Length: 176
Image (cartoon, rainbow, N blue to C red; front, side):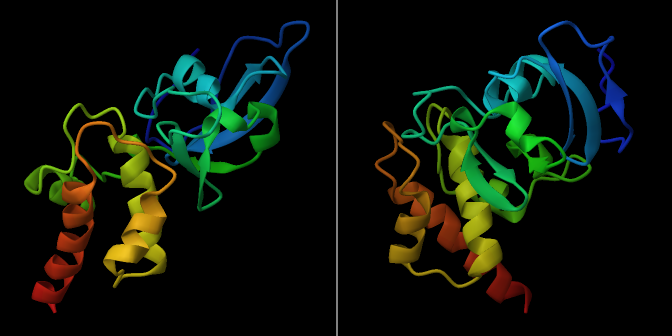
């Protein structure tokens, strides 16, 4: 398979094999035409075919949030969605948040506020917080807790994650 991440070019796999379906996805700005087993989950397509391993596989039931990505601008648990159902969709993974190697203010804030420990939940937390801050640039602590409620963290106790999201608001106010 030939993938050129971030180029905006269509990438393709070898000819379709029996029992597979050809789908097109735009992931982090790059269009891909790929062949998938109709039963393949989106998380496996993203990780195993496209090689984007930021989203993690945790529970495969949608409870932990480690596999969270944005599908058509909304966060989803990619372990609960068949890849074929995303045909034609635009997807953003955690790898697609940074631009030209520059971390987003939220990613920088997670680093500065120690909003991670082992890092396993971090991609899902970042995706959920990105959606929250896009839709509500001035979230309360309760708003933040609700937004990240679908993501389990066993290391941090969530306080530093909440601090990290709140720090983005403070950064925005300082820029004004």
